[in-house]
Length: 126
View 1 (tube, rainbow, N blue to C red):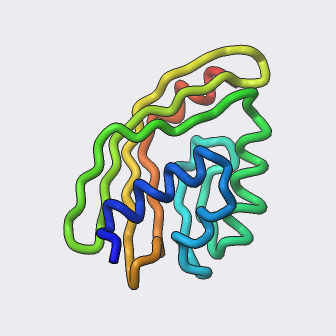
View 2 (tube, rainbow, N blue to C red; view 1 turned 180 degrees about the vertical axis):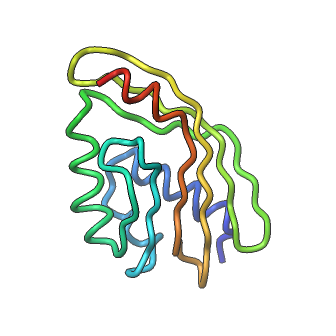
């Protein structure tokens, strides 16, 4: 059985490699909470809403957008990830912005994601 940290690390790797297997790391009723200042930010419920609505709409603002995790901290059912977003908007402006992601894991699946980042710098790139 994977640890919670391994589940989240594997989720990032799968997403980065555009391997549709990232769905396997999430519960069907996942709650995805992004900051209001993010493009298309807000609360999303369910895998379809997260992966077929939020991500395509959010990513459509960028030529390039990557989340690079640097540190993983596991405490009980939570995994806290510190890292940086690297991106380039459709207008050609590049940015590097630190983030903190908090995942809640239940029954070896991600049930909730919360994002914390400097959305002003991302908005300025748009």
